[in-house]
Length: 407
Image (tube, rainbow, N blue to C red; front, side, top):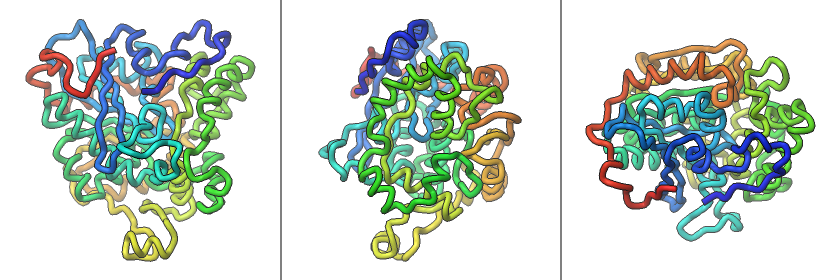
């Protein structure tokens, strides 16, 4: 399990969330966290965090899985206190809330036999997150929550892996069987018009050069050092702090941002977390090619893997079996409005049950916005409630399940 990284206590003296991991933040705000582990078919052990309310009745309004974005983790959903964090707002509304963690971030660094010190551990991108991670987590939550179908809320990369999964027959079967609603926040598939500085710069660099510069393991391998030093930077210069985070994520630094400025030391203590160099190379590939496609290994290996010299495109779902709500931001430099519209136009008729572009919102407003609890989260709560089916009996009434722990 991820151990919270010690940070300079001075800039976070009034913000205890800086020094807490996700389960500890959940506990700090009056809930009881559970830590679950599920195993993917290719051997990765993914950590899920469940929010339980000791004051809640035995029945829930339904189960919800929240899936984070690029270089992020489960903590992104709980960093704006109890009244401003989507995870807590849904838990207070009576939902059974689960927070996912993709392979390679701080909470999901275990494998059947590989170790993070080995290059082989990091040979994956959002391809594998779509094919293995998301279906595994969705199936696990459905089983443990004892409901046939759950709701999925994804942000950024969390939407990309969902759209890709819906294009893979085996993964689509799992998602179609177990999802009653997919909510895509700042959705990413096509990256043609992306203007996020880091990914736009890296897009000009081929995968071979990326590996030569960053190595063939974790991207930003010193993420622990970053989480240790960034809160101090934020205490000295808020603009410098915001600019660094926005370089990575596609938000708008300065006065136009809706992000809660007083919480930057907290955000920077938890973000960024890890991912692979190959995953960053896959994002960069999408910017260069303008295509939503599998990872490009080069002509020779592509032929061996795909029976094609070029990576095949993801063909978006041809049926509307998973109702989908799409929310984008007009100032999002990662999920650009033109790219989002291209995605929406390729989805089958009847699949999109809600489509809204929020004016002046950027990429991080959806998870860290100080006014998201007023303008967006009530809509999400209502949408999820309208599609969810309450669980007949809360599984926690029988005690904690195998493979889970209460902290």
